[in-house]
Amino acid sequence: MPDTTTTTHPTWDDLVTTALLGTDRRPSTTPAALLDEAALQTVRRRAGLRPAPAAAPPDPAAADPRPPLPPLARNRLAMLLADRAGTGSTRRGATPDLLELLPQWLATANSHGYAAPPELLPALLDAARGRTDLRPGALSFAGPRALWLARLNPDWKFALRATPGSGAALPPPDEPEQIQRLWQEGLFAERVALLAAVRAHDAEAARALLESTWGTERAEDRLMFLDSLRTGLSDADEPFLERALTDRSRNVRATAAELLSALPHSALAGRMADRALSCVALDRTTGTVVVEAPHECDAAMERDGMVAKPPAGRGERSWWLGQLIEAAPLDRWPARLGERTPEEIVALPVADDWRGELHAAWCRAAVRQRDIAWSRALLGTPTAPDAAGPGAVSLAERAKLLAALPAAERAEWVAGFIAAHGLSEAFQLLGVCATPWAPPLGGAVVDALNIARDAGSYPWSFSGVMGLAERCLDPEEAARLEGLTATVEETEDSAPGAGSYWSEAFQRLLGTLRLRRTMREELLPPKP
Image (cartoon, helix red, strand yellow):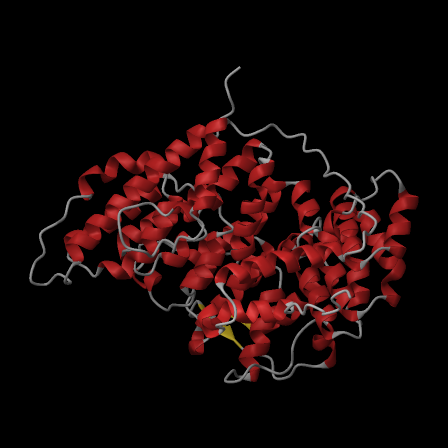
């Protein structure tokens, strides 16, 4: 008679539990028996799967026609990406922080037009995923393959968000029917990308495209589309922007008013100028500027973009005055104030403590209108006693004004500021200077750091400037740092440990500059 006894096998969950608890807790099971049963269960589970149709492979990535990296530069990129777990430029020690060099490496590689090595793209996207400041350079370097990979891995979906239209092919500018079809039927991101592309090629065609659907767009979409008019903004945009002043969305009205005020010959700029000039006059007897701030913000002023309610702690009249001055064309002030130059106007005394409000509003106007002459006048001389303190133009406002000046003049102004006032107030000014820093600016920074070191200053307060110097100093400045790497003798007034810290910081700075110079040479195109 055959044996009909059924052998009971433990379930997979039972095996996992036994493995976690240990076979010594289950005397009936030995380690060898557990492994045998696990192997048997694995075969049984796999054999029970029913075959399914194979998934269609993805379309191949688009070809990247750019030239490949030189071999040494490719090895350097692999090294930089391998160090992406570094702790940043604030760490102690004399070793350069490789991850902080990655943005510069990417910028240089992009300037040469190289293609990214395909095998390094996953590590590059992982690095960009963790640091938003890397994303523009990394995605530009990665090219179309980054979008192809991002569609396959949700960890890299930031690449799709960062690229308007997610890399969708836009119709060429000479095919208006396709442009119109995508504008009418495309997704929002595709339409944003399309409008920007058309605007860059043909400003009038882009504006016509926007007008064709303006009345049916959502408020948040209208705001985004309106912002595209900043590219190629001209007097031809004025009629459309004037109509946008009556939009039902306050944010759209405010953006339209801002754009119109950047057109010095627009009707809105003229209206704001008339209001602003009526509030400011010159007392020819005393040579003093007299200010009479507006007493109300009427409906016409609100239509032109003025906000009636001031922020907490701000007076109504000064708030209204500032908005008027900011929106008025700067070229109207010389005639109003005795045919003086911007420098002479800024030097005039202002009655009744209105100087700060008036100069701050002129500063915002100069930044908005990108007026070099007024920016230069409001900046003043970098050696002025109040240049480092809270004067009529704060350091934050000075940084914005500096951005309007040519790069060489900007660097020279900041170098003079550092020479006169030191580094403690210069951090945000350094941030707007072109890199690598011009020799006068780089020399001023190194000299100021040397003075701080010799004075026994607290070195930790200069860590931010040191980090900037590692990224922004010209590598040719390395020769000047040779003598600064030795440990200085600490005096009674020195901060404890300052000597060794300064030595490490200068060694790291010197090593970083040398490494940056090597990286730059590695990225040079091969000689024919």
